Image (cartoon, rainbow over all chains, first blue to last red; front, top):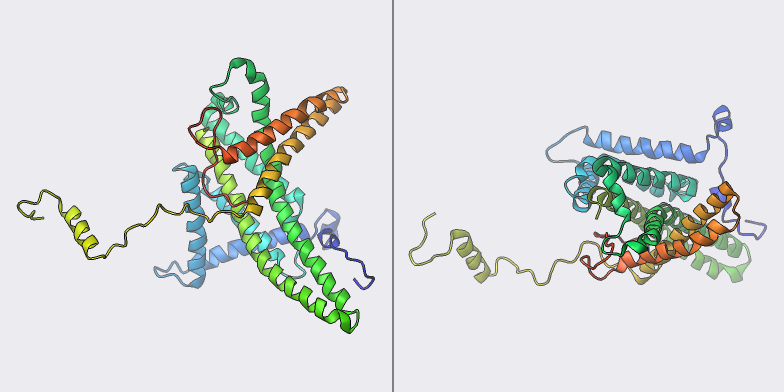
Length: 248
Length: 116
């Protein structure tokens, strides 16, 4: 930063870690994924260990999370939602913890890489397609045939429907990745402002303070976005599953 | 449950009426607010933009890939770009379709979706 250049993107660079493991492609990203998964298991496992009738704080948090996602599944997908609850719950917690851990300084946000979010989205889209095929067999493809249109238009409309279906891949993954990345770039830029202005003599002190204040607000905003985007990803997964189960 | 003579209503109905007279049950003033708060205009705009562009991107990728596969340089791409644009508009239409019972393909997305 001292060179007077804002380098907002190097925070997303991956660095090999742990020598031998790093040579195999182990970097901060899988490390944070492991941390997120471990933390999820820890909170749920330790939280639910007492199995108290009147839950303590951690158990209440674990139960709240569970019931929140459980209700979301059943309300959005319907009664069949129970079968998909484990998937949605896992996905939600993984993304939630990935987003939230990324707010800590020096921590890496693995959801800020489109490779990660696209892989998650691919899992969702493949699952919805497989579920649709498993439940409706070949009738699933009627999903792509809009009803009430003249037959002559179908060769044009069916590809459009299929493209619309496939566009979920991009819209779901880009939404999560862009939100997380944009937030961290903003934090980095305003953090650089603080340092650059603070080092520019007495005239820069006030703007530096302002930038610091904005950064403080941004951190709170990032927390909101982290939770909201995990929720959006989970609810969109539920909506897609609803489409696959009910076809319309 | 002894029913008062001359009152044909069941017990629960009379109880409800009595509770209402005493103002014990706050009567629901308006229809339930629909779950999540209304997404802001910016959020809606971002969703529309993303839905429009994502379909186009997928179409471009498919067209480009098919061209590469068959060596028909621009033709699949040219064909798929308008289709992708149409699919993007279809995505946006689904978001704002006026009536779920409207004719045409209406797998309207229900439920709260405050995407940014």
